[in-house]
Amino acid sequence: MKSYISFILLVVVSFSSCKKEEDTTEPLRDVGEQYVADDLAINTYLNSHTYNYADFESDSTLSLEDIKIDTLAGDNVGMKSLKELSTSKTIKVPLNDGTVVDHKLYYLEVREGLGEQPSKADSTYVTYKGELLNGRVFDQRIAPIWMDLTGVIRGFREGMPYFKTGTYTVNEDNTVDFSGFGMGIIFLPSGIGYFSQANGSIPAYSPLIFKIGLYTYKITDHDGDGIPSSLEYDPDEDGVLNDTDGDGTPDYADKDS
Image (cartoon, rainbow, N blue to C red; front, side, top):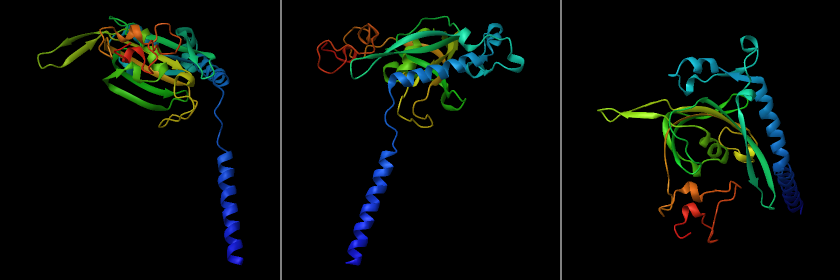
């Protein structure tokens, strides 16, 4: 009997411990409230930091690695802030209840680039460096890689059309030299990033910074229907992908649409 009672007590204590641990899980944050907090954090960062823009005005050979963000202190006093140098774009984020929360993405052109601008549904050949507002680097690609913009987080996808490609020459050994490619920085709230999902060294609800170099791009036609994906993806920019025939497959990936 004593053993039976001890067993029952152990089960009750274990269940209570599990229940208590479950109750400490943070509930999903409100998208609108989180955006307000993110935008405040981003603006605080933009107003208190600058980058070495004078170096890029005098040297066209500088690369993505040469972009140095620093605080507006010491020798940097009197320089333009990132906020003064950047432009904002409003991104509509639809929620499951049918409401929409506007999010601002900030982008800064470091070097204009000599070529064309991709759409947010194209494939881009890029280098990038991803950072948190505290300066921690969570990902980077020093050598260019191809990225289909339909497969990346929305903030990255929405920021790419503001940069231009460069030019390139193919050498006798089939290597390629790029020059005059565009570079810039985008600052995005978590609602168009990973929001509540922690990803690697990125904590949940983190605003993100991406330094980007855009070498070239390819116009994509994901479903091979002869219509560029840029015309079928989200032409009204409401954040809801077009699905004309209502079969659950977005138009850009649906040859029957």
